[in-house]
Image (cartoon, rainbow, N blue to C red; front, side):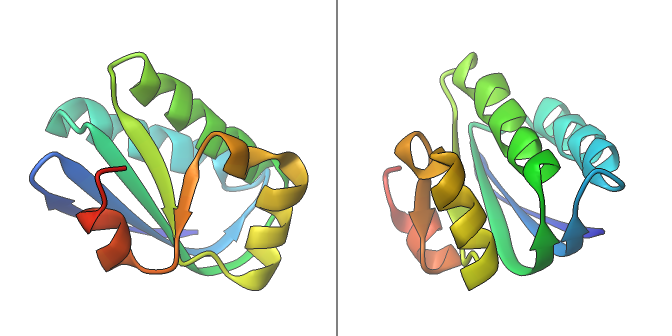
Length: 112
């Protein structure tokens, strides 16, 4: 799993590329948490456009970041989820608590 970070004011955009599964989840968790803590992020935008596979470990990563930021009055949003990833999120009920956007620009410009 490859992660690319872009910061825009108080928003951190993380582009995930590859498979988000039990093999990569811990590393992804640690890297994102490190950036959240260092950069004082209030809104985390997770770009899933290049995620080829995701299992329940990926849901755990997203929910963990949601809990972390919620405790600091922050938010997590999903952007550009592929069809397969979107299905995993829908089945898990994640979209009931986390907003999803069709594009990064939409996620950045919305008042989440």
